[in-house]
Length: 353
Image (cartoon, rainbow, N blue to C red):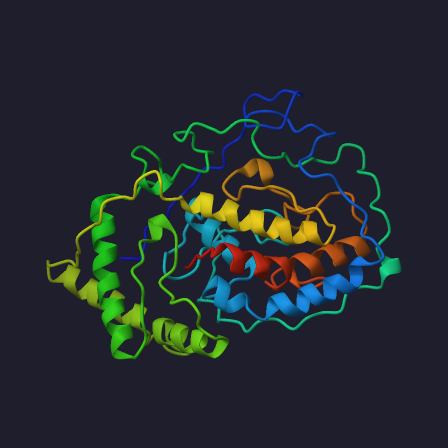
């Protein structure tokens, strides 16, 4: 039995669109795309360097096991859209933040190794950041926030959780939750024996079992105890899975009590994501740069050209400067530094796979 069943999340399309707005079910207005683009000023380059140098230092501790944009998206998109992803391993079939659509049949392979905070990359010279070029005719425009809050029962609402909604294809039954929590109890005991804390974690609610405040080296040691070394399958997670399989074969499958669901006053994983993205946007605004609103669960915000938050129509030099401010690297949008790191620290956003 896998740690989690593969969950297929159909990509929804908007059947009806108008030209009068950018809300749910409406066509994006070419003249009203959320935040307007701004020229990267001559004084911004030096500020970008400071942002990249200062923010990258705390990205690992702030975001958890791996806080790079692509890995976070693999975690949040993997549980919403993955065709064959196992919670506790890694989500497959997920598009990368710096590329186009994902291969729905992709194989994610083994767990990615934890990474140290990336080194800062110098900003491009100021003369390399001219005023953005106009959008090419016919270029897709990403919608802004919905005009009005959606009903919480709408699958595109930030308040909606597909895993706890009866009738949703991704709904997780109490029996599945109980089996998962039974394995988690084995993982937690194993981690404690190895000298590590492992927090309570119900993946269908988001969050992370990794303790807060770990240094890079501590996080690597914690992850190695959990996942095992790359050459062997000897981590606590693998041990728990073997025990679960043995118990099921013996007719006594592992189980544990399922806690009640939190009330509506507790933010959903989607709402936590939007708070995190708002913190990233504030950081970018302080640098004089636009960072668009986007919802990872909503295909209306998908972009084949880099981050959905990046303004369209930028030159190569402007894209490099924007990436440096947003992610701490001019070309590697998986670097996880810059305002991405700042947003993680400010919002406390946590995710895990």
